[in-house]
Image (tube, helix red, strand yellow):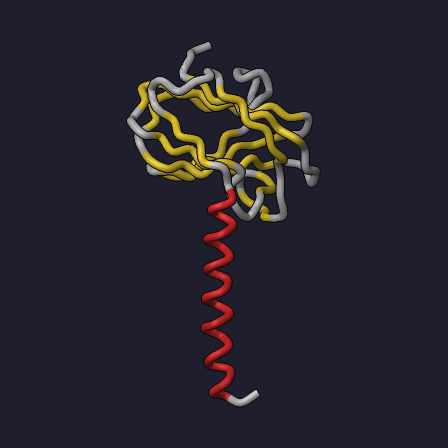
Length: 143
């Protein structure tokens, strides 16, 4: 391959990888959340885990779910249930957080509290090498 041809191929491959990355991000279902969403709890199902090793277990290359919080909420709770060992990685306006199961949450990854308006990418990870089906519960109600 000539040097000039190589300089044309590399930008084309880079551009295609960026386009494909944007497409995979667009494939994640987007849930609009406001202070009156229904039903409450909103339940979403999917498959946990993936091939990307992270500090929050094995995750998929793109988010499992995207939450678009329309207005800041004084309280929102996310809970993940699975037959495996799920984790929840949240990447949003306030930073990146890893939620692991603990005894307080009954062995399920759970996070609750104030959520500022913005877009949140949710990755349901897996501490084991397995992939499992999961249920993500989104609620405005306190336990």
